[in-house]
Image: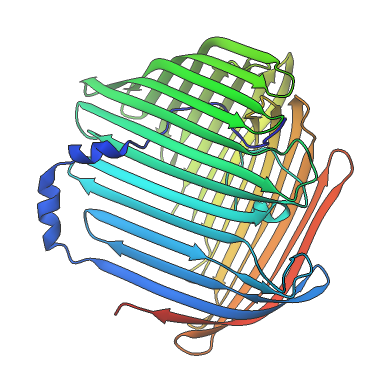
Length: 453
């Protein structure tokens, strides 16, 4: 019953748009574009690695293609990654595939408007998904199988600097599992449509009308969900240093379990309040939300502070969440420091409430730290640590946690040939005591080819 993929809350208003809005873009920018000198990059790389994968010696042949074309009015990006594996005992044939990825994005600017479109595809083992999935608002999933994620997005925005503006989005995503042992991991597909209309009655007030609809259909014994929102909000400049944003929507959520036919519904007013007070080298922030869901209403409160200096940026927020009669602490923190012209470090820590498509409520703890250093013109080192944990508060999902380490070293041998070495490790544990571990050590070479001058 669980396509365990959720969001921080069922907020549906995101920026993007239908394709027919292409016709609304001013033609003047298209004419001016002929004067742009496009900057283009086209690169293909192939490598060969010897890897120790969970005690087995295998071969890995990374194949990567990158293309980018940009002018002052539009950008086009394409990225493909297809690693081949040789002699992997987990594969049926001698030659198999590793974690595959593809992305295509296009963005066009025209005076006070923009259009963007994107396609993404990723197929990876579930125990290694923490390296690829940056959505920390999902419940942690542990299983020896694999998952294929496909998504598409269209977006249109206009009038960002005008008294009348808007944003529209259309999104689709599909999540398909294979080789899994958990019967609750079922395929699902989600479509969403959202829009905002902005009005600026005075220079200090920017009001908006918001609407959105989200539909998720699951296979087998999964859960189908329907979420809709309609409301209004406004951003106010209270003073030169203080800003306030208030939004209220009527929210309707309905979930139906396909195997039992059980239907759950929640309707009510959702309230979101955000405030900021600018201070020297940073600001104070306030965030409050109260939103209904089929398992009950949740209320969040966060008080924050951000500090910006020439050497580092620091932000943190502390608060509490109330759900089903209990109050739990929540927090968010981020740190970024420039250690010099050749080195930097970033870190983030959060404990936030999430809800998945089945209505399972949980508290997610996320930690991530990354470090990179350029030793000289030809060698570099990077590493990261990630930790995620889901503590379920409502529903039949299991508590789970996962920890991952990644280290990469690269050294240029010639202008287009490099030596690469790295290590990845994942440790995962579920609430029922089951474990999912993965470990790989590799060494190889990589050759790049540039197609454009």
